[in-house]
Image (cartoon, rainbow, N blue to C red; front, side, top):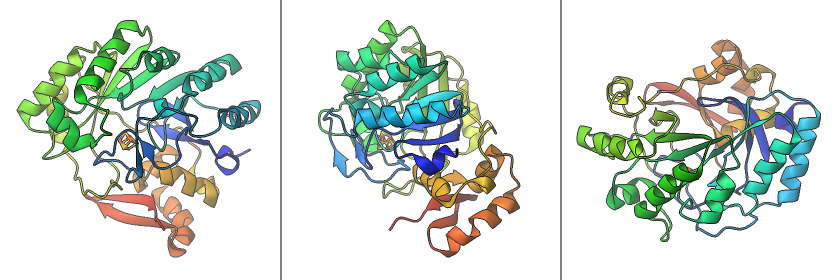
Length: 313
Ligand code: SF4
């Protein structure tokens, strides 16, 4: 069974820079989120809200997962992530518990951290083995400029929620810092973020910049790798600059639907897409050619890197 062909709420497994092979579970319709980040690769947020509800049917998600698990497909993690903020889904804790009860699956929650000020969200988040939160700003103004959040989402709440989670969460807390040129990459800005990150006592800090073209209507270039490596040492623990793991299904063997599904949620560098599945770049280009010719995929240069992405209608 090729999971990418059969499912609506599951995607991948995708090569995650953080988690190895990661089966994604998408609990949000595109594009419902608490934020509208300038660097978002999913697209512009069309429903900016903090409403917590069953955005997609929990029972249907669990049924898909059971079908996937029954086929004994491999994965390192089952990860709640995808088209928006997963903690907006009122049943995300139930999904985490279900996955844990189904077998020896590790679980991860990739959250922007915006709702962790709510005790019930923190309680549910603590069901995961790994919670990755974002902290890329140092005050209200920088937070608003980068993340363009819903009105109820403030930097003060974000930081308080992430700190409160740390106090109560025995699992792995990872912090992602997204650095963007002209937004938060000046030395004093990075140092201010690093100081706040330190207060979270995270098990790991991941330093990122835009590696895929943003689709949120803002052109955001990448921070040079040399600068990332320089500032990594300012964080505690020292920040990692994640790399692709190389354990995914070869893109050459994936179906058209599977490729489109994967790239809609995760536009990837051509080389990374090839490396993730152990394929040659030329073979991947050949595989993608019919989809490019049909106008379904685009391969375009982004800051010197060839990126593959779905062409939006
Ligand atoms: S990057 Fe994440 S938090 Fe920001 S708008 Fe996109 S989905 Fe929402």
